[in-house]
Image (cartoon, rainbow over all chains, first blue to last red; front, top):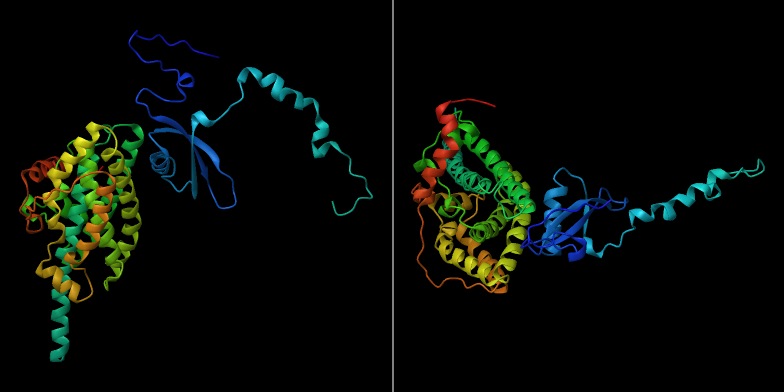
Length: 116
Length: 265
């Protein structure tokens, strides 16, 4: 779904997608990923605005790891992420629900098979 | 019966305890006053992320101030709590550096003040990790990790402000010119400092200066900022003689406890 926000004539275009994720001040939007523990993978935690990677990293540390949430951080410019379109969800994801044979539980394990 | 040498050792120990009280209190005051100053940015920072970052740093400094004030109270042995020391001393009894009581000014001014202080704190706590006083060494061990991050944060901003726009450069250079005169005070070595350093309890501030200068000069050079030639130096904070800004700040910080002594919430 898209929203149309009324704008004043002199107001800059607030549409982030058309500006490559730049907001009015010119600062990039960054996505923050945190690795909670060694051995686990980085998980998306949220986003923030920063002029560059180093500031984004420090802000991510201050905003998202105040309570011992992680041992490692990634910050990625949001504009570098190519995402799937919600309108395509039906064609992208629905067909898998009709393919239960892709799940291991679909198969009967013969009694003769040991050690499984 | 105590022998003469035991009595001498005991006197010696008592003298060190009183010196250490003043030493710990001065460093507590530095952190308390700067924590209060930095808190002034809450809800007013340039962006939400920096608002949280500055509040985090203010809280780190406040936490450090609390540990030091609590310890100072124990050393003094007059049953004064951290709150008593923070809220019921007057301007002349505060022995913080003049640098930390200077008003926030604009963002560049706050970051320059913070950077000059963070570089000093990093050097100070690194040295105090080796203090013969176990409590002070323990506080130093916690403080050094925080101080290193604070220095990275303020240093990062200095590079960006110095090399950012013409306006950010102008404001940062102006802040440096206004604040540089307060830096020499950090390295003044008092009789207390000398005695405590001699006993392996404290460090001589003068000894921290060369490393501090190298560190800040490197960043200012990278940031395209000029360290003022002006050798005029202001001092007096360590003896309780302050700029006009501290009294006003204390009035705001202390009024609640002064109006309702001992109140809690």
